[in-house]
Length: 257
Image 1 (tube, rainbow, N blue to C red):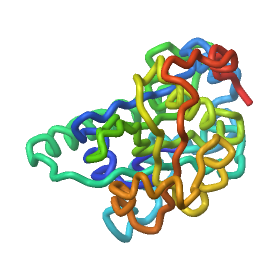
Image 2 (cartoon, one colour):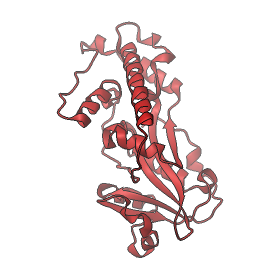
Image 3 (tube, helix red, strand yellow):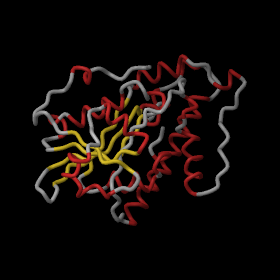
Image 4 (cartoon, rainbow, N blue to C red):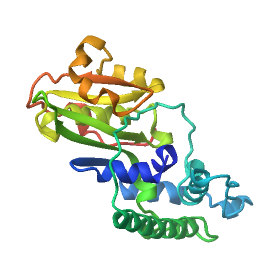
């Protein structure tokens, strides 16, 4: 699912552009995506409309949702797995008007190109002729996460997960855990004393399964970041070492569920 459908484009913009923030994006191989598209029967051959109707809009967020669904929806996905909710949040910072305008311009251009690519994939014709140019980022993305390393007033260096999302069809397939393990591996992210996130209520179990704890006594050490978001639970993980090797499972490519 598009991250902007969950928290809104302004939140994504502010968080990702926050000073010191890094973003990791997991992508499928373009050849795998093209092979999948070429194996499908185009909507026009099934007697279905090429373009899906856009939902009625009632506010700015709903309007954005409708625009994203036109070009980046789960209607092209084959599974409807239950939510493996994976989301952390980071405090907001003032944004530059010019940077926001640039972001909005780029977003409009991306949506236009993505809509053209989707129309190309769904156009009547020989499905075997779908070209590589018909598979853009909106087709390749599996999951993404933003994080930053920060030093607290106590001198401790923490890695804080800001935002995280897994595309709907890949939930419950280990993608979220894969991203968490990457974040916990200091040979990838650098040395830190603790890994933190502000978990939504329905994401606490997920992060617990990934080795983070909501233990109040332990997390009191990090009360400096406790109030950055409301209605969330601060969770943490203390690294076993500062030079962890990548787990064997992380060398495996993301495959179809």
